[in-house]
Length: 134
Image (cartoon, rainbow, N blue to C red; front, side):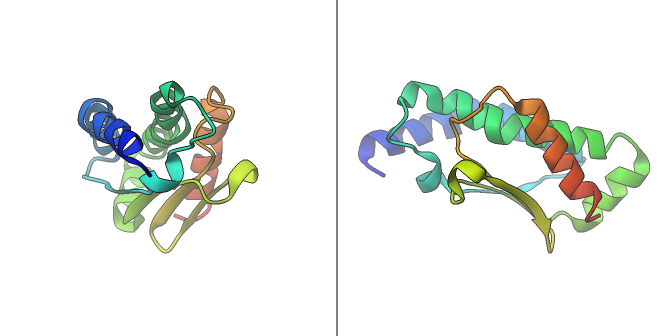
């Protein structure tokens, strides 16, 4: 990741990420540990003007929506609080992507700028993964 990419990541972390992270924490009812592999999320093959939109729509919004769904009742809130340790955002599997939950780690492994507007589909996948493992 070059200096320009690092600046873009820093801008997102300082300006865009705080309200997204706050929404995630609010939905969960506790502070969620978040591990973002920025190196894998900076796609030099995509116009960097799309990065913020992609990061928000591919990773943050579906995760927030899924956590809200899981925590819509006391049983879900308790199950998530007892089990969830970390949320990981990365891009290692490429086009196929993967969403999984194992040993307290929710992993959203997707390309950051592919099918950005399919937030509902990703949300459903995250909910399904969480529900089947909580």
